Each structure stands twice: as structure tokens, then as C-alpha cells.
Length: 505
Ligand SMILES: Cc1ncc(COP(=O)(O)O)c(C=O)c1O
Image 1 (tube, protein in one colour):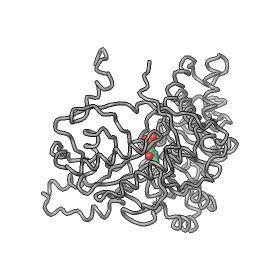
Image 2 (cartoon, helix red, strand yellow):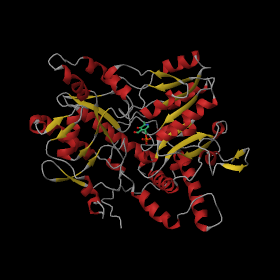
Image 3 (cartoon, protein in one colour):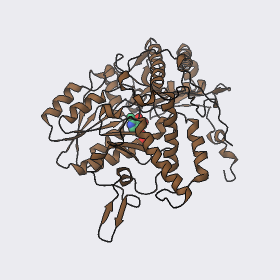
Image 4 (spheres, helix red, strand yellow):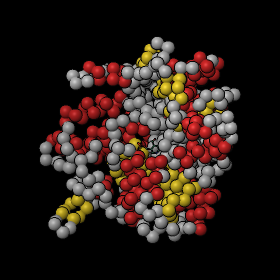
């Protein structure tokens, strides 16, 4: 039987909003009736790891932007569904009926969670995550409007919302940010408006994140959609970093496509999700053809089903993962988007204030920007790889470092620092690895289970490290790729997972 390491019952009164700048009008009204007392439990909050000092410490997970911990309800839902498990697309036997109806409920629950009217929007479960959904859309939209070769992509995108658009004969034009270098902010909407007006007939769609996975900076996607639609340009919103942190009112935003990953919203076993306007899906040729998406097939021809979700979901979908995701979303709606936003703003705002107050720390992006859940920073006396390694090895604090699959954005934030590097005393053969150690940042990102105490633990750890840098640094070897490895401490991952007990291990 599974043992859940911890159950966190979230009490939002503990989080006096620290930096309340969310637009409350975007909160989905249909959650107001829900029971706001619903507790949300997460798996693994009490997990401990050995440290290089020889103790075992409870890990602190500040890497939710990559993947937050799993909500317990995702797992208990799977345990409930598995005894009834069967493939979908049939109503003949009981289990098939249950699977088919539960999958339909999962589609509907996603729409409810993102505030999308079912008549206008359809949910499509697609591959393993956001990446799969975006690749699919890039392919479909390019084929649907071959006369419009330009795709506008924001300059702060994850590679998943950049590289797919460079294919299929598209010309990508990057939308600049307000400001430059380390203090750049959100997208420059004046540029966007002007570009759309001047090139309205050649732009197919705009690809933009609602929240940056590097800096947590929020874009005004509602305004972007308004500008785009004046020129018959579609908008694809990458919601990977906003989906877990509050309301998405798709009816209000009017985006044509919203994509996100189930694993970014506490359901690691879930598929990728695309919510799309039905009217546009009807114009796209169905992709990944096979069973499930067609109503009739002869040797010469085939007909798609009328249902837009089914047309896009050929083959056997990730039924269990989709149902688990819907259960998590249901629980989050019951808890309330507003409380989730208040929690996010409290924890993120507190972290920003504390980090920005440290003399040796630079927090990237315009400090006045609206942000959600992620912060990227550097310490003047510690390379990003060294700081991240020490935080993990000595303090069991999990942060992420390097460029977070957003190389162009990170490089532009670091532009001035990298230019100013003094290489005169560094051997030519060593220069590349020296630059690699400087090309990157540390990112902390927050989830529903993180508390203000967690931020204090992080700040205390950074302060302890900076007081005695050499005591820690002398145990590390710098690698050519910019990472640092401890000279004698290494985690035994197999024994942590108990996999060393398997018969053939
Ligand atoms: C903004 C953004 N888009 C896309 C992705 C890719 O998500 P996935 O790896 O689940 O496909 C990520 C992952 O970190 C992300 O943060």
C-alpha cells in the first residue's frame, strides 16, 4: 500500500497577500459556489535525503516550474479507476462505459477549470505534455494557412514554444520585450500592434506564454488576443506556467488555443492538454490518423467523426492520466482559484522581496512586473552551478539552474554580464568552460505546498553559504559544461527508490 509522506491542508489565511496585483475580474465565477474548505494533499513533502554533512534532511522542493509534487488525489483516483479499467470508445460492456464516460468527464472538467464554454471550445489530450500539443498545432496551423508564412513568437519562450514554429516553411519574427538586458519586462505590445497592422495578411498566429518559465513574468494575453483578432491572426497561449497558479478565464481571454501539461498541475501521470476553439479545429485537417477519429473508412476514403476532441485523439488516449488530472483540477476548483492566487502572490512576493534585498544577489527581469511563481537570480560570488549544487548537497533544497530550455531569453537577460567578463587572465583552453559557468541562473519556483517558512529556509541557506564560501567550494570540481560535482558525496538513487532490492537489480 502507498504511504503518503505528508498531507498538507492548506489554510489560505496563513498567507496574507504579499504583493496582490492579480486582476480579480479574471477569476472564474463558477467556482464561487464551491466548498472552499477542500484540503489539498501532496505526496512527498516529508521525503528526506542524505546530505554531504552526513545528516538526513527533509527536502525542500523549489522546482515546481519544472514539475511540482503530485497531488494525492491523482493517485487515489487512479487506484479507484484501475479496478474498472478498460479501453474507451465502446458502450457495450460496463467497464468500457465507465472509461468512456469518465474520459468525457475529464474533457469537460478541463473546460470548466480554464473557464471555457463547451460550445466554443474543445479539450484535446495530446502526447506527454505541452511540447506535444504545440508541435501538433504548429504543423496543423501551417498546413491550414499556407499563404501566411509568418509566426510571431515572444522573446521569452521555452524552446517548446519556439522551435516547433521554425519548421514547416515558417518565418519566425520575435516580439521584443519592454526594456533590455537584466531588467527586461513583459512583451512590448506597441511593437506587436504595429507589426500586426503592417503585416496583417502574412501573420498566421502568435505564440506566447502567459507566464515565463524563467522569470515568472506575466504577459497580458487578453490584450494580445484582442490585437491579433483585429487582423485575423490566431493566438496560441502556452499556459504551462500559469495553469497551476490561479484562474484562466479562456472565454474572457478569447485565445484560440491554450496548451499545458498535466504534470505542471500536480498530476505527473497526465497527458498534455490543448484547449482549442471548435470553429478552428473544424478547419484543421485531423492529424495522427488512426482508430477513434474516424466514423467510416473504405479502401478509397474516410470520414472524420463530428466530435472535435475525438477527431484529434486517434488511438488509445492516456485514459487513466486524463481522469487523474481531472480529479486534481476538480479539487483545485473546489479549493478556489482566488485562494490559489493569493497563496502564489504571497509566497512569490515574499521570495522576491527577500532575494532582492540580498546585496550579492541579482534578480532578473523588471522588478515591477507582474509575476507568478518563478524567480531567476544569480549570486555575485557563486556560479549558478555551484550555488545550486551546494543548496542540494548540504541543505536538501531543490532548485534548478542553467538556462531552463529558454536559451535565447536567458542569454538576453545575461547579455551585459557576459560582455563584461574579463577573460584576460584565463588560459584560452579554459575560456569556454569559464563562460559556461557564468551562462545561466538559479531558478526558484513555488507551488501550493510551499510556505513563507520555506523561503526563510532558502534565504538562511544562501546566507550561510555566502558567509563561508570556501568551506563549501573546496569540495567541488567545476566541469566543462558549467556544472559542479562534489568530490566525495553522491546520492545512491537506486537505494533511495528501493530499486536495489529488485530481483535482477
Ligand atoms: C512555458 C513552458 N512551455 C513548455 C514547456 C514544456 O513542457 P513539457 O516538457 O511538459 O512538454 C515548459 C516546461 O517547463 C514550460 O515551462
